[in-house]
Length: 172
Image (tube, rainbow, N blue to C red; front, side):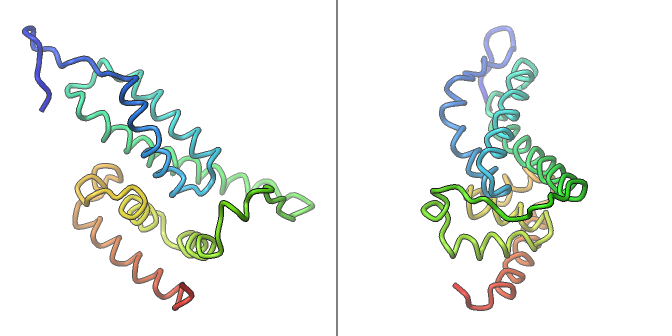
C-alpha cells in the first residue's frame, strides 16, 4: 500500500516513469491479443491516456499497473469488435493479402499456426492464455484484468489449453 503525505493524500503518480517501464509489457499483451502491432500500439496509447486522465483520482499509485492492464484488455476487446464489424460490412473485391516485406522475418510458421489456433478460441480463453503466457501474469492479476474470478481464470486456461492441443494436434 502506498504511503500518504501528512494530509492523507496518496503520493503523486510518476507517469513518465510508469510509461517508460510499462509501455513494452502492455504492448506485448495487446499484440498477443490482437496480433496487429499498429492496433496494439493504439490500444496501449489509449490506455495510458485514460490513466493520465484518471491519475488524480487513483487512491493508490500502485493500482496504476492493474488499471492499465484492464484498459488494455478492454481496449483489445473493442478493437476486435471493430475489426469484426468492418469485415462484415466491407467486402473488398480483391481479397488477396498484401504482406509486408519483412513479414516472413517477423512471423514464423509456428507463430502462424498458434495464432490461427488462438483465433478459433472463445475470447475469454484467448485473453487468459495471452495474459498467462505472453504477459506471464499470475491468476490474480489475470482475474483483475479480465473481470473473471481466479477460478474462472483457471477454468478458461485449462479449457483453452485443451482446445489448443486438439486444434494443433501435434503440429508443433
